[in-house]
Length: 318
Image (cartoon, helix red, strand yellow):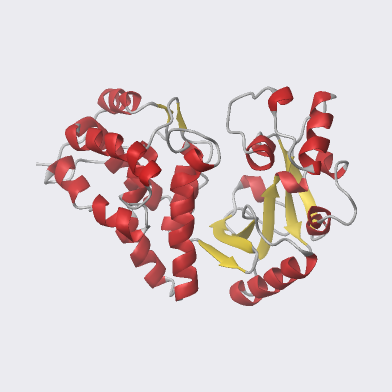
């Protein structure tokens, strides 16, 4: 007999799991064999091996207690099952603002690892070559460990769960120094060239990328060949924000990258803290931000003077 949760029960379960915000249509009916069997069928131990996480002592030390808690709790199993299925069923929907959580632990990692078998299937369907497969495996591993490696957290940020869902749906490839995500346009990207529902390609700049003008030009050329010339390329990033322009040298790699885009919209965001200062805290103290690079020093000085940094959405010039 299949059992469907009512909203009150779902709210209780998600609250227990630390979620303060989640989509109202996330609820799933219980699998016939129950949640415990559903979670066991995900073969999490094999997933850890596939992504090379089983040998990461620090990750496993944080992961195991949460994983054991899931195995003992039907309520946590229900949350893991529901979110995992939702992330796959809504692979092209905007998810960034739909989830919030008041704790940082490894439950998002459990949810993502439940999808590893579908990740393999999706990469096969899209005929990824060995280069893209290895990139995806490495990027999942980086995403699941970023909270502890980069931000010094004892778990995985909820934003990492959303980013990993893009990978598990095989919607991200790396071509040269840049990454490219195929997605459907929503209101956020509407302009003269883009309508709601159009397939677009979002450009992402990975941390530590070789970002020279030649490398960027080569990557964009590869992307146009890979995706064809009938799709619009966009970039939503703090790198394109108007305020950042005042902190850049005219011969810098970021300054060169910005030249490729026509700005269509500006958005309020805290991403400059995450990506420039490697700080994932809410409302961080500006005085405490790092000053290890000239750009960090320049942006921090501007922030202390009252300047707020925004993201911008740009469309790739022809």
